[in-house]
Image 1: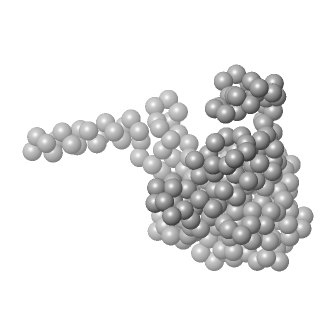
Image 2: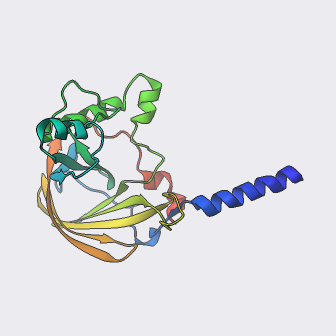
Image 3: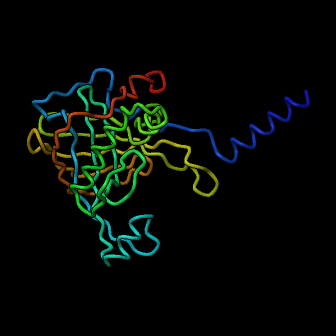
Length: 237
């Protein structure tokens, strides 16, 4: 009996300090059960990327700090990427640069170029099929986690992408224990490009104006995971 009471106390303290993981705004989701996209709307045998640049100040991350120290250049090129599937499932990968030493993308040359960042993504895709069990597990694009996964919907020349991002419910005491929904809206320019016009944060109803073009890059592989929403359909009813 004493052990049972102790276990309950520990569980209560844990939940109060960390919070129970919650997925928000499920009622706002695109209908993922009946959604479908075609290659006539957008080519899907690859990924869509936008080129960005970030200017670091003090305390840049490892490897980037060495580059800045050696070159004096603190403007780092990186990519934000969308993998879009025929059933509307989306995986977003952001902050990919050519300098960081990713476990799933070890390479010979690390450069502050967009092409080096594309090489990192290529190696990440190859690593998911590694014969080493640990590498395959770590580099498998986290099929059981909702963070940075979402849905896309196309109507005529408009595209809507919804994504879940992991955040704190209460920043003063919680860990990252909630998935909050974001919605990106844009226009399709061709079957190989689209432009993001705005981003909505459902948590605050804040809308940010954007103007980012995403271009297509063909690949032999994509993240080999199932549609998270269809795999966990009961969570979203």
